[in-house]
Length: 236
Length: 294
Image 1 (cartoon, each protein chain N blue to C red):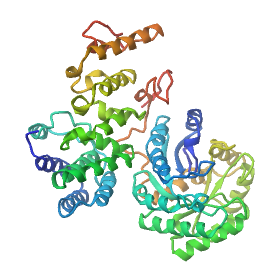
Image 2 (cartoon, rainbow over the protein chains, first blue to last red):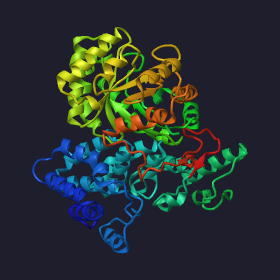
Image 3 (spheres, chains in turn brown, cyan):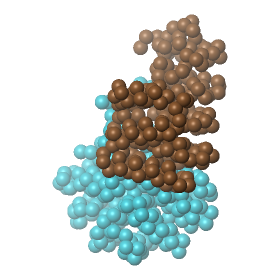
Image 4 (cartoon, rainbow over the protein chains, first blue to last red):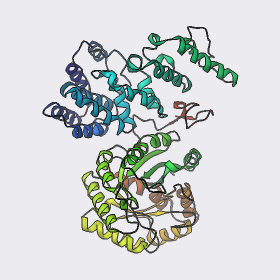
């Protein structure tokens, strides 16, 4: 990442503040300023992280062209249009901690935001993972989300998020792709998939297609992506 | 008429129950945290339990078009467990601030021990701190005395009565509750607590102000359709629709709405049913056609 953490932080906060009502904007500015100053206060940041939905609402981020350009310049090259205002605020708060706290204090914060989070809080952590410094240290959180049966949580890591392709070990990445196949997620939504295609993933996909055919069921139309085109799925 | 079941332990129920409830008109539920039929022995268990009420169960309900809210607490029975009680009280502030937590509860008395007194009061204080209503369980044994003690404690702590819902009322306890500004819940059970004809008689005598009914369905013999069944008998018995609607929808909405978190139509979370979010291989659908309603 060529940009510094504080530039990412400033950008996320500007986006969040632009979308917030005056009271929410004031809250975010005050909360971020408090988190940036003095010793890390994990309890206070956890509290703010939880309160973000009530403070900032759930409106869709839907960035404008200029905002997309600025995000891209800051290294956020993946789509964030589907983020909610609360997710953006939560990512901004994590970015504030990442920019101002000692690195060792960030890990327990991110871990607790996830472990003690409700569905929406966990999704926000997953979407923020690729923005954090040394993101590979949070790989267990990403892998945990792939074991969830809460589909929006799974999609927060599997779809429109570069994290898995960049940091997942091969086994976990392959399992995530197979889960996307059988939960009906279009493979085009998995960022970086083309760089993680392997013979092993192709073998697993072929096995899945064979199992589906044997059961008299349809095969996902895009399965050929995983097998170098040697398999053809069924048209929906 | 939309129905609200303000006390039901969905974690213990099946997807067939969710289907039947949605089919009978139930659009929203409140799931109070409670005990598991046997004592828990680790504080960490509660962390996972609270997370499942806020995560998985809410998602599961949404798949059937039902809004799921919860109330969190150390329950009266487990207040007596020295292994966990204080630890759960220390854990609660982290979870009471979550979206979708609409009260502190179930709290109250079981055996009416001094430990129960202590943690009942401590949780009334937590409700004040987090600006939440409270859902108060009344005991099965020595119920009238337990109700009187609960009302007295609310007064002693200075907890606002209009933010307290006293649950599992009977013919003997309801008048005590209605003398205060507290709200009165009634758990309609197949064999114990309260049944539909008795409930109809209570409504005819006391009216619909501050009166709620629930199924309190859990892992025991219970019926998740008791709210619609009670509403049906009230209608057959000549109780006005406006009163029925007040009891099965407007009262629970008004009571839990005091939390400021009873978000019945959140924008980021489609109220329509979309089971295509799930497909075979997960634990809600098992290969059948997903239901989509827009």
